[in-house]
Length: 292
Image 1 (cartoon, rainbow, N blue to C red):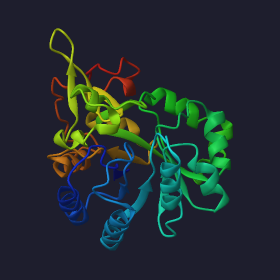
Image 2 (cartoon, rainbow, N blue to C red):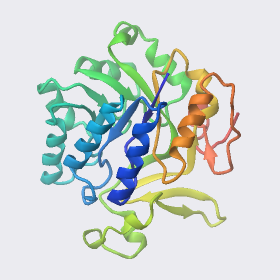
Image 3 (cartoon, one colour):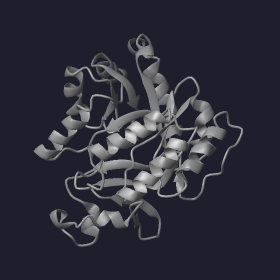
Image 4 (cartoon, rainbow, N blue to C red):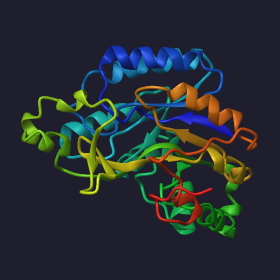
C-alpha cells in the first residue's frame, strides 16, 4: 500500500509552499503527490507554471505527480484555468469537478476522480471506469464495509485491474463548498473584497460550539471537519482493499506523520488518537467518533 500526499488545501505563502515541496522531494516514503489549487481561484500565490516546475522537480525525485483541478467552478475564467491543467501534456489530472471529465476523456488524458465527485455505488464507479478513470479517491464517509461491498460487485471485480483505490486517511475532511467565503465573512468582509484574509490562517479558522467543542474549520469557501481524521490504526484493515492512502498537508509535522503511517502499515506501531481526532466513518460510526 502506497502513500499519497494530497494537494495543499490551505492558503500558504509561495515561499512556504516551495520549501514544503523541497522536503517532500527528499522523502523516501511518499509515492504520489497531488499539486494545484482546489479551493479558491483567488489564491494566486502560485500559478500553473509554478506547479509545473514543482511537478518536474518531484518527478525527478521519483514521485508520481498528479495535477488537481478546482472543486467548485463559478466563472468562465475558472473553467479556462481548468482546461489549462487538463492540457498540461505531461501529468495525470485529478478531476474534482465533473466538468473536467468529458474534456479529459475527449483528449485521452489519464485521470483520477477526486473525493468531491460522489461515487457511492458500483454502477457509478463502473461508469467512470468506462469513461477512462484509472484512479479514484473514495468519499470521506465511505466505510470499510461499504467499500468492500462496492468492490466485490461483479461489474467492478471484472475491471478491478483497470483502476486503483485511494482513501483519505489523515487531515481535516472537506465537507462542503459554497459560493460564499466563510473566512471572509468571519472577518466581516464581503467575498469580492476579502483581501485574501485566509492566508492568515495556515490551517483554517476554527469554529466552536457554545460548549467549546471544535465542530468545523473554515477554509475560504470550504468547510472542513472540526476533528482531524486519522486512520493510522486502521491501516491493517485496508490490505488487499486499498491501493493507496492520502495524507493531507498540514502546516507543521506532515512528513513526520507520513513516516508514522509508513511504520504502522502492518499495525506494529499504533498511535493513540488525541481528543481532537476521529476515525468514525471508516468504522461505520458517526464521523466525529474516535474509536479503536
